[in-house]
Image (cartoon, rainbow, N blue to C red):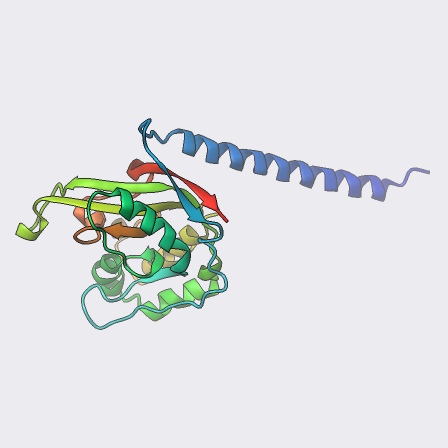
Length: 240
C-alpha cells in the first residue's frame, strides 16, 4: 500500500526547498547586478571595513528628540570603534584634514522629514520610535556597498557659507532585506492615517549610509547630494 501522506509530505518539503533556492539565487543575482552597475576609476583604491561593523543587534536603541530645529530624527545606532580604521585610512588619502562625527549611525527618518512633514501631520517621535522598536531596528541587516565621495561645489548654495568646494566621504550600505524600508513604510501608513499629504513623504526615497568624514560639514539631500550607488567612489572589503 502506498503511503500517500508521506509522499505528500516529502513533495511539500521539496517544493519549499526549491522555492528557497530560487529566492536565494535571485537575491544573489540582484546583488551582483547592482554591484556590477557601479563604475570605478581604474586607479581607485580599496578600503577595508572591520568585519561585523554593521552589526548592531547588541547595541541599545538611542532616542533623538530635542526641542530645537533638526533635533529630532530616527536612526539605527552602530558602534563607532569598527569605523575608526576606515576613517583613518580615508583621512590619510583625502588630501585635506577630515572631521569625524565620533559616532556611527544610519539615519532612517531625517530631521527635515520629521520637522517639515511628519510632525505637522501629527505624527510624534514617540510613535515613530515605537514602530522602530517593535520592528527591532537595531537588528536591521545591512551590507556594505562602497565608499562614497563628494568632492565639489554645491549645486544650490543658499549662503556664502555654502560657496566653494566641499569634501565628504560616507559608507554606502544596502538595506537588502528591507528591514529599514519596512519601518519607513509603517511610518508612512501612520502618516496617511493622520491625514498627511502622501506626496510629501516617500518611504522609498531613502539612501542608507554611514558618514565617515568631511572637511567643512556633512551634506544631505537638501544640499542636492544623493548617497546611493551614484555616490560610489571606491570599493570596500571586509577585514577581521
